[in-house]
Amino acid sequence: MLKTILVALDGSEIQERVIQSLEELQLQPTTKVVLAHVVPAVELSQEVVSDRPQAVAEGLPYLQVEKQLQSYQAKLSGESIIEIVTGDPAEEIIRLANIYQADLIAIGSRGLTGVKRIIQGSVSSQVVENAPCSVLVVKPAR
Image (cartoon, rainbow, N blue to C red):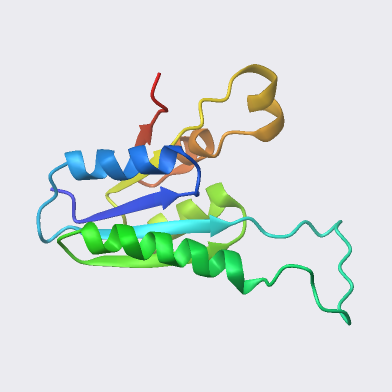
């Protein structure tokens, strides 16, 4: 029985398919779902002028992500938690899975191949390799 599921969402198109796959699992009412979004950390090589206002309010993307996660949360029948963290996506997903002692991680795959996969990396592959539990990788529709 799955007691805790960590659902890693990234705001991409595959996010809807991940949520749909979660619904298809027919979870028990006692299953806790952690809806997680990782905001990639700002590259240290980027220079930011600290004594001037920034062009984009930092809180705006966070609020949009939170609102989206809350809409998914409202559809769930059991206990659920929202986690929005900053850092390396694969590392943070694994860290959250350890914290919540997840039995399953549900994550989307963008379906990158070849050079794009090498350059951009694959968060889902890193999570599968290092996760402390089983991982459900949801692929894009063909």
